[in-house]
Amino acid sequence: MVNTKKETKKYTDLTPDEIKAYLSKFRKFILDGKYSIAQNENRQENMDFIEDYKIDTKKEKEILLGIQYDDFCYAVDNDNEEFSHEKLYIFCKCQELDYWGTLENVDIY
Image 1 (tube, helix red, strand yellow):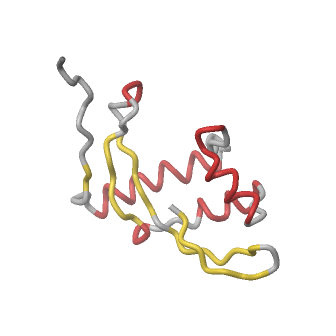
Image 2 (cartoon, helix red, strand yellow):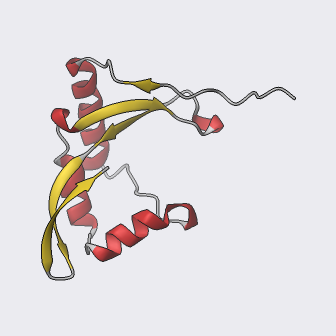
């Protein structure tokens, strides 16, 4: 039996201009309301995070628009075959959030 699943690759060699160009497009989508944060049975972690830190739409946008070039970690090939032509850009944003009345610094990926 032959394995036809494409091997995903991790990209750490993107130039600052490539990352900044991606963020420019990303911000336009956010400002135009053309984004969603997956909240389904496959994304329970997202749903728990949003509930635990009481994140509403306004806070979502604030966090997403606050992502900067130096928050970039790496990019990877999308392992979903339907979207295998896409690269997923991974950022880590440290944000102060309210966890049931206690402010915490949280790394958000």
